Image (cartoon, rainbow, N blue to C red; front, side):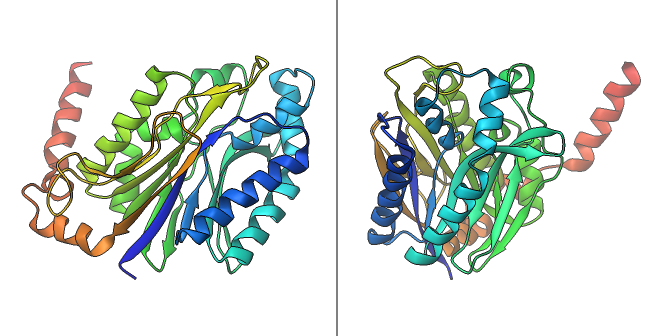
Length: 294
């Protein structure tokens, strides 16, 4: 398979009157993506935190425990939807228990029932200090019939070393569920997503939360995003490196086609080849020199 049609979600924090309304709304979005021909749909980071709007205001510790209580329902729901609609689903990220703590975990559901998981590796100061989450310590690179994929959640995309590790293990698509609540945060994630696509000559799929709740919450209460699908800024792609991008802060699915044959053309016949032309021997020597000076 050389082409993959992807839908990335700009998920709106619309008012909820019940838990059932949350799942029904998601099912409709998955159905819409499948009807549009998408083979993969990507939902944003912290999407299930929308359910906290049905609760009294909680502390972060209480919120972690409450969200973890949804874990089995979450897994069953997306697994059933993936099978029913014949579509791969990145079900955003979900706070769940790991050992004695909690992690921010991305789940990727396949129609055959397979579930791949990736814990967020780089935690923001808020996630470390207020949520008290545990950072992931392993990078999963997933084999699919379209090639290898990796999941880099929000802040993870801001660290070039992690994307390079994924690319060196063969990843040609990075899935980036994000949650940013200001233009500052969004710009960091968006610009880094495009940078990772350029320097590693691969695709990046970015989704995010938009809109706001009527009542302020200490966890998730507003979002800012323009979801998109990004490529290298070189032939045979566009000069902007944009395959598809949404309308800022609009509740929608952004759909585009990723052509992995074109990606190989870019890697082997592009004007530049940053993935292949890097000089790890030079970098290592300079790092040793800096270490010696210290």
